[in-house]
Length: 293
Image (cartoon, rainbow, N blue to C red; front, side, top):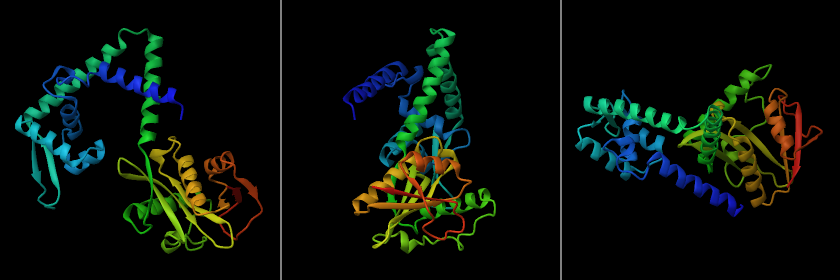
């Protein structure tokens, strides 16, 4: 990675923290630092679970607890244990908290206008487009890909939605019992592995490998949730699978796909996979690909 790119990111961060007012304990002119102000906004009018706040903001439990205590002492919110589940803590804004949230919203709108007003119309359009692009790329950088147990909740969630989407997109539907298998024991090391991609701790994609001693390894179960498409996640999952394959000494990878999955076909070809003759009897496949690592 070029050092100039690292320096550019750091310059951008310094400029943003200065211009947005992150360094000020009175964010947006109110009596709260940024952390407290953001928490008030995320709690919202209807309230939420404390664990959802932690997940949504990627914050550790101790820091969220400190913020909640501070805001509770200011009589802006209340934290209670759920009557249905004693393990769940719920947080709601008080009347004062709701008024403070409205005030913060108004100040945030005014601040956004202050960013745009000094600029020409053309500059405003450019800034808006640049911010949207930066936001998308930052979200992409937040995605984490890890090897998981194929029987885990996140793994099952991904595979269920993968099967459901194939059922909707394939001309004849999709029945996993008719397809070449990729059972949990086949995706558990050393027989294979399953990767799950998570964004803010929520699963958003998966991909799997099946290893074979005397035949090329197979890529299976490649899927990205609709809400996470456009982040380059399919490419990252494919590269992660290839990395895992190389680590185990795999020299050749095989995969097959259906003709309706045009975006997947484009991804594989762009990644260097070459179309070859059919190497299995997968009933839902129209294309077979191979890549030498």
